[in-house]
Image (cartoon, rainbow, N blue to C red; front, side, top):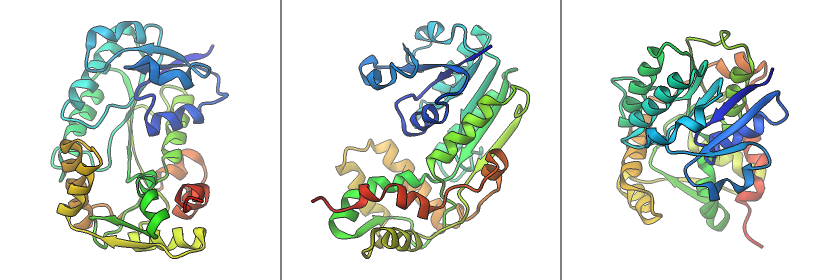
Length: 291
């Protein structure tokens, strides 16, 4: 009998990729959105329900009859509250399993507030009495898509991570790992935390070189200061808390905190994770100059 999977964060990058990864699987998909108008493209792929993780009274109808919960909360100071509301609703509804998207290096002594907030939610889930699996992915390759305008126009992109190395991962691999866990028997991954990375730890000069090889023109990485990047983010309308969070991550990466890889993706999927060269080829049109 098909299981019902509730997807939170349904219009975001990772959850959208997860919906793609579950396409054709023997599951009933239900997606939770705060704004029904943003889910028009999902209605032919899943049941759409309206609710808000910040409003626990809105959640009961969405969780009714659900066996598996994909739990993704937005990065914000309220992330632990949102996660708590979802876990509470899951317990009330008799959900059997929660697969939660955490963050790289989540810990009570993490060098960033996001990691510490996620550690609170991870610990609560671990003690919830539900079956659980936690995924902690590294820096998303898809973050490079934020630089497409500059790369297309000038052949350069700027980040405040100096010459740090990062074991970056393609979001599609995160989604496929999540799908694997959700499609396996509920006990198979219970109590496991998987730290998901790409196949190699790269500098952004190396990323630029890979992009250049695929695009057939030079691409250069230009390191900038924290202050300069912070100002740019605010200028693009990024909320200040998010800009501060990204700066905290950048400082951690500069310290060497992100220079590692794991074999978790290969262990779950039976194949190596996608390389940044694969990512560049698959998204080459996004980085090309406008014609």
